[in-house]
Amino acid sequence: MSEIKKCEDGTYRWIYEFSMLKNPIILLTVLKIFALVLIGMWMFFGLFLVKDEGFFGAFVYEAKALILPAAILFALSIVSYLILAGIYGWKYIVLFEMNEEAIRHIHMNKQFKKAEAMGWLTALIGAASGHPGISGTGLLAATKQETVTEFSKVKKMKVLRGLHTIKLDGLLNHNQIYANGEDYDFVVEYIKERIPE
Image (cartoon, rainbow, N blue to C red):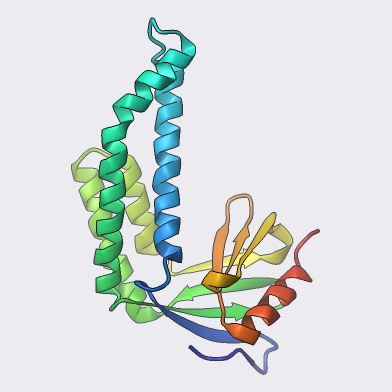
């Protein structure tokens, strides 16, 4: 981990590195995505497969049917995260660039190459198994090295001090910013001053 430096172009830059086993923020994000997928499936099937039990009975029926897939997805999430953490060398390393307009979250090149390979593999597995959602997720992972969040488009900011994380959410943009100690407080205040009320 390094401290924040203001460069000649007026941009603040820092590298953040953390153990993927000690800090669960990425795992929690993965589990949240799978939970949203499961809730979406439950809602979809409950709305369109209404049985004789009535509208609410259909939701209960589908909830019972989704228990096994939910358990499988949860287990796969944990295993996938451990595989990814192992591929990354158990560390997540990212470069941040922050100026008056935006903040950029950039995967370090060595880790991006590994993520790119895993993304293409996921896309191929999804295509071979007939699951376009999995293919899409893999393609996104294979081609996305950085996330740029414009401060003017941020709708919600969440400060997770214990995890050294700042979450910035926009309409179609979600970003997680990491910093330590005094640098963390500086980044929080810097962003707060530039996002809409």
